[in-house]
Image (cartoon, rainbow, N blue to C red; front, side):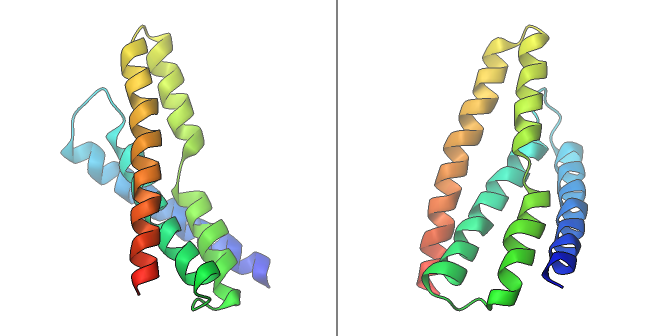
Length: 123
């Protein structure tokens, strides 16, 4: 039954990712893929919160951990998309923009995880 809930979490995560990415793309017109960044940074923040709640504080029921952390976040965040976006930018001659995309994703992602952990630990 856990597999079914992980799959449902994945379906919801994918749908939310699509909505967030589209909304950001409509707000920000840029050669940089801002929608992917927003998805990954917000997903990193939520991962920190869920880790603190589920693993460190054990306040998140075991039955909901996999659907949220593996299903929802696995479908919502988009590491492979960051890599593909960066490759395509570099391939099109925008190596500096590609490197900027990689650096900001990594730096902001680790900061978001730390903030999510701090927030989750404070609950």
